[in-house]
Length: 470
Image 1 (cartoon, rainbow, N blue to C red):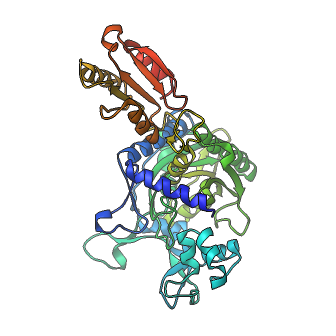
Image 2: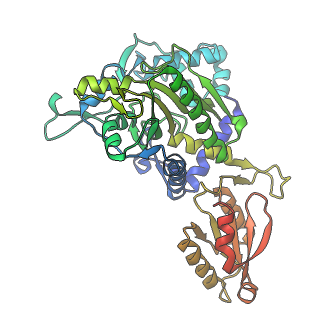
Image 3: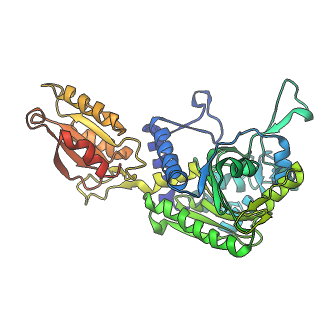
């Protein structure tokens, strides 16, 4: 990875902590590897992202219903899905430093840099690799790793239900949200009266015991997914049709909310990459500072999951098609998105340092988040702390909050400095109460991206901001 990419990553991580988007988890105790807490701005940004996803793919559609399944399910769910038997990664352990890494990741890094970790390539390793990549090639005890034979490692987190800790009380934290939708297929069809084609949408936490997490919030052991299981007639032609449809809708979601199209690419999986249940999978990849990596994906899961649950539970999962008068197990197309990865992509894409040609000082940061995603929609400033300006500002805030518009009050520092603070966290509009506001019942509203200012009547503010699509 190029030096400027490393530099951008460090700047974004610094901004996230300094301004309250993302904190290292358990920091006062020295942290906890690759775990993060979302601060005041980050938690709101994440909530806005999930709300917009839910609104678009559940609320505004007739063919998708939502649900929220349990994180801990009967262990038989994971036996049926194949996770207990096959949800493993081959790991290699260094005999010298005893660190473990996924074997495929080590081979990928070696192929990427086409080098061994020897002294001749040391400078290249330092300048071109992330810390995680260096760790996979250069042993902390010196020289190259001395890897033992690869061993399989199950990625599910194990826990125990009840007072005893034995095989009869073993349970697992779910490694994906999908199975909760599959095991409720019959419940949904019976209670919601949905007809194929239809989908079930869900946003929720999942857990995977990743051995080599990294790249900030991109790969963590605890993460959130937003996904749909879309049930269609059982044919590859029907599956492919909806696969193409959902791949377009998924990418459209990212571009509609501000990610530049040139930073996205669609990559079809090779046959060797396909999961055991997939008849075809494509990833939507984003050009992160650390490289092009998976942001979301769409998979053709065929009838594998429902068929497995029929077999293991003894409960027939067939759907009765009233139109055709026949019963069948439908095929499934699964669009899925990592919420944490999506949030990171939106932050990276929105991050902009001024070149000095837009009226800002060189290096000034503006976070050009889509107004719908921005944690704060309107910052309200009194020009001075006197002549009733703070009181009028608070009255405006109360009125805007009643309309559901997230606001922030700031009376500290010059107006220019207050503008810059809000630009840096992505606030799309700043509103200033000045000496004339009490007389002419209007305020100055400044646009983050254009920096243009206009005078707006106080009575028209709510209408003005609603029209600005915040």
